[in-house]
Image (cartoon, rainbow, N blue to C red):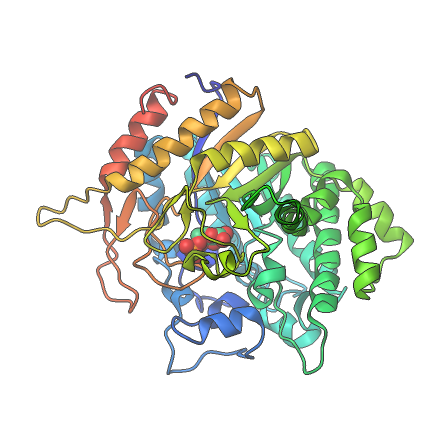
Length: 476
Ligand code: BGP
């Protein structure tokens, strides 16, 4: 058991899930701000129910998050005590450009991120910035229909130019779009898409994918020009698909499902559309607006490393009987229950070995350094009378996944740069909006309805992870 000396033990968050302060200064409204908690959340995230503003009937988790906007000093101090080497967070686009493409950036918004970055650096914590984590300015949804429109690329590049100029020399690690493949599954959340009547879903989502891939490539190119020492990566919602049986039909289905995901990283890593994707689009009548300049842009903007989230593997079958046994956690990536795996309270299957498998498949495919930028267990925690939180289930989950990373490094010999565990401090869930689905090693006293003191408390996993980090993975 030996992790590289510079392995980045980390924690991750996203602006919309932790900052709150959604209407402070000039901050504009973004897609994530209008996603309510409750039954309307899913149809809105899917882009089938149009909701471009907030109302009094709903509760919106992003409005409060965990109010990190006002607690960042306290939070980063706790991260330092934990020994974090890396903190991954995202930028709220509309905190800097309230309308998404304003001429002049909002200084107060930039100052917040200056402070966040400086506070990390003060403690020797490496900041990692996700440029875009599920937030599209509502003004651009109204103006362009979100990523349906090519003009989004210029707006996004405006943001990137500002960020790279501001943080060059301070921030080395960058990710372009969080879980870029999510736009196929939750088009409004991932790309600000609301479907118009009669629109063909795949035509719209793959068009948006093309524009996001172009924007990602342009951002990579610009980052390399402005910050020669930076490492800029993609971010895929990963998790290998397993065939349920050795029936070749199951195997083919698994391959096709994987390709839906690897479509994105294939382009971001190899700089061109894979042949099978071109064929498939032809067959399905999907026509993309690809210019010869686009082909060049994709070629020039390949990523430096493969960032990915891993929570679970997924299993597929062609058998209708087997397909009846879906796991509730897999609503986004439709998958059947794997009889060999246990599940979390939310039905997400727990598969540490799948992390090792996924890392190997990604490396075999791309030969680029890997970075697990999200992993963790969403679970309900109980606070004892003395304030203790005994989250042994989370420790077990993290331990087993760290063992899998150890195998990736020491048995498979792959370059794994680090792991930023998701929701290192509790925050509302992206999929359900609930606060009860907690991932953190730091507890935040708040419930889904927004009640609570917002007090931060250490869970047992805090002390455990602290020991893991200080022993560089030797003590698990
Ligand atoms: C990923 C997102 C995160 C995050 C995480 C856990 O999809 O990048 O934003 O929230 O999953 O998912 P959830 O919050 O739905 O449990």
